[in-house]
Amino acid sequence: MREGMKNTICLAAAVILILLNAYSAAGADNWVCPACNTECTGNFCANDGTARPEEVGGVWNCPECGAVCDGILCAYAGTAHPVDSENG
Image (cartoon, rainbow, N blue to C red; front, top):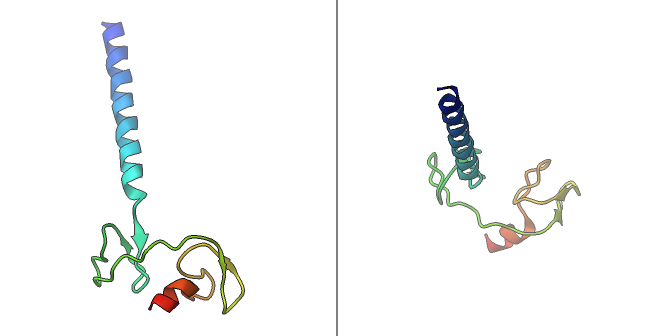
């Protein structure tokens, strides 16, 4: 009986780890709406309908404060990536 109980506990632990990994991977596709700062999934913000911004690659310098940035907005000045601004 003890061996069967250990196997059941190991199986339950494995299932929990699989579910936790799947839950973490599902959250990896989240993004923050640039208009209202709501965390979103999918292609549109559920709060205001703003379309998900396209990924902008590379590191850039903020023209407002000079910070080195790697996202679509400067974390310090809130300035949009220059490529995004040009595409308007």
